[in-house]
Length: 309
Ligand code: SF4
Image (tube, rainbow, N blue to C red; front, top):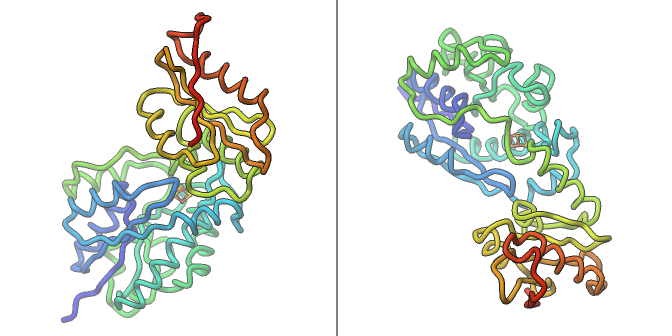
């Protein structure tokens, strides 16, 4: 008999690993699907796929995802995380692959009630409908609490072997991890970088001041200390590694400042308007470069090197 084929969204977290295990236990053939963007990467998904010994496809969502983060239809969570829109986007990609590669269904590790924004009953239904996967989206961990999917109705999936987990407690998942002898999985995190409130604040500022920002601007947000002066951003590296990364991300129009005769930060000055960076802002950038170097803070003989990016 032909094996049922499922495409499973694999983040690399325990819930998605369990979704794979639950389906494998009833003989389903699995392929993993992972994603990367400016705000999350694919490393854990790849690691999990390797340990589960299943093939995985990774899709780079960076540009599309950034557009969605700028204007989410269904709003943000506590940070700048547009979880409902993000799930819909991922599942739309999954649907295309399902049709192209003839999978019987798409599955996720979502658990009813586990996350307030995207995993309440209303959101789960909305996500299923808007992704175009109505009837073909299986959530094995909570399936018995949800309407049967078409593959269940057709007998391609045994509903009685699916689970009825709900809520934020991780007890049942941890028991299952033991049962399936899953030793390595990350501790449950709150989500991607967009759920980090500090980062979200910086991102919101950037969107307000420069709505057309792109990947390079987002990568810079992950580095250094940030200071806005009107429409100019000053970014001061916090260590050697950050200095190197900032240097790599610098564009031709940026100004780079460092001290010639003392070790310390590399500072990048980027204008988000058409105007040249005014000298008072360059003065401020020099001050910050000196201030954040413990070796030079009190010195009077500092020489600055000013370069373009
Ligand atoms: S936490 Fe981040 S990656 Fe996860 S659904 Fe929300 S926006 Fe998407």
